[in-house]
Length: 105
Figure: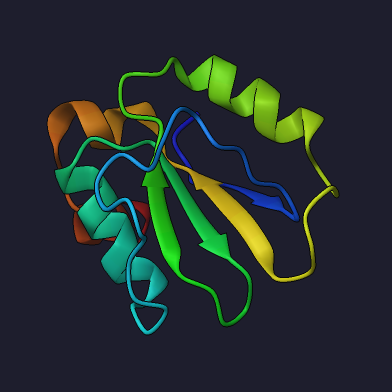
């Protein structure tokens, strides 16, 4: 799959938060946190509520395992919580989200 998958009201904790244990500022944009996830090879981005912090997770965990757990948890988190599963090619090659947007247009 080559697009970013969005899982509404779904969150998983895989061990710990991989980059910043206490999360990233809620003022960061989705694009900024995706760029940071790519740089840190984290396939999973979690927004912990409408006014919540961002978290990067899943470094080194198989994407299919992450996808299965997110799907199993769909609808179990409160409103505003969502997870983004990044496409593998972004993490392997290390291209930026701007490169992907340019390719799609």
